[in-house]
Length: 422
Image (tube, rainbow, N blue to C red; front, side):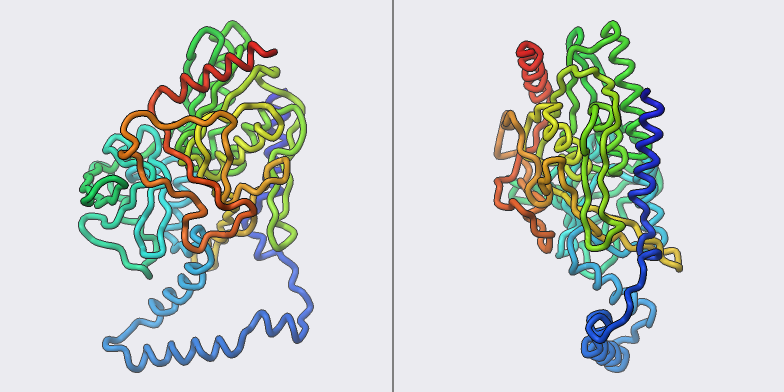
């Protein structure tokens, strides 16, 4: 059953998430209205005037290619925080990250309008985590060089030869002065799933990111836990804290492993090919055993898709803190010169029709961070990012970053309550 089920779902996902939709979208018949909306001639003339003024009068000569690339990047920069132009090298780095193998420091970032980089989450077991980089940190300089607002991928200097060191200048909530944190780059081979037994019969699976092999790794780890439990787990804790997301396909496949039927997630955009519904196929790897999902303010995107699907079907209780609220779909559109455009093309909706965008997932059981709360990173959500897509339910307070073993113990306690109530 599992292999057949997974192959069916993979086929559906391959059909539903094709990135080259822009090349296949039918061109509508031109009318005066559509032509005017497609080619704003007055704005084009204004652009040409500014372009010529720069070429003729700027204090130093400006290369045509550089000027045009700046203009193209600017088209995307003002759309939303997740749409960006990637040159060939940047596009290759982006795809490497999805495969889970690259040379760098291991951190998920969000570029700010002023060029700085906000840390969504450091990835488990990477140099960034070991160096003490935290979710919510703002990187204002790399190797002493501050960012420029109009530059391309400002995170590019974080990539580099394994063994080399990069120094991050970081602003952290509760600290009066910037921190200087040296981080030694490594070849990042992210093991996105790991597991252990918490108590006899109760398993724990940590998912740190959603990559190409994450769903298969989850199935293997779950099968191993089942075997350790004597053939059947009594319950499972899925830990998605500070999981920045990744591939939607991986999150959907994991949800399908735990659901017998029903919708997992839907996407809606402006053109038909961006509208998709993903549904579960029969078969639950846990045979109905209770599940708790542990989340926090660093849980974003695909993490929220998985948590939302399991919550809406009453398949799991959500424990922790409100999630980040990234409910938009980005599609990588390759260009003929080898560059790519990462463009926001749709929004995610949970099975109950809720938009995750700028709202996040509210937990059933709310946890608070332990220890010195002033040392907590600045609580920033998708709704706080300038230029973000508007959400249907904005205004909820930001969640907390939850670290350590205490949240796991709380999720296990909730799991036992669920088991006892059956």
